[in-house]
Image (cartoon, rainbow, N blue to C red; front, side):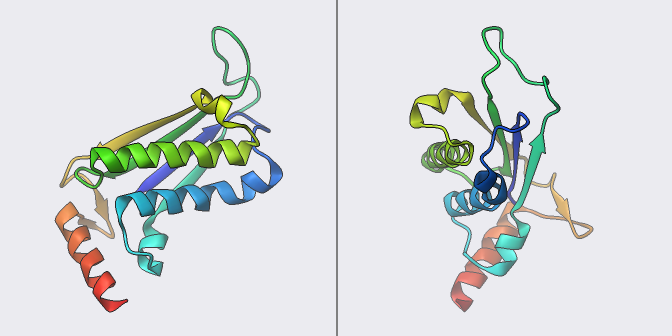
Length: 143
């Protein structure tokens, strides 16, 4: 199941962006994973917003806000093309939520973490990528 965590400096998102960025990022992740647009898969796409304390983020050059998007997916869920699309769309989503332009894209880092098969558990059981693929196919057939 996918998980996405956005870490931001305090006050770096617009008011509207703060309200919508988590669901927007979750939708981006599900779309690039190729998951069916069903309540079950939307419920399993966890999205966290971590706001750092004042002064917790800086660079060696300046204090302009930087954004870190950590994405965790099952190993094999994203091809290179899908990873590239995810990185591009997640970056655009964060920039929009912060009211920044494409010129600020280097302020957004997206790290894709692939969870090895057999090392992800939910509901008291190990979840394997093949199980998720079968579940997705079944839900697409039901739609």
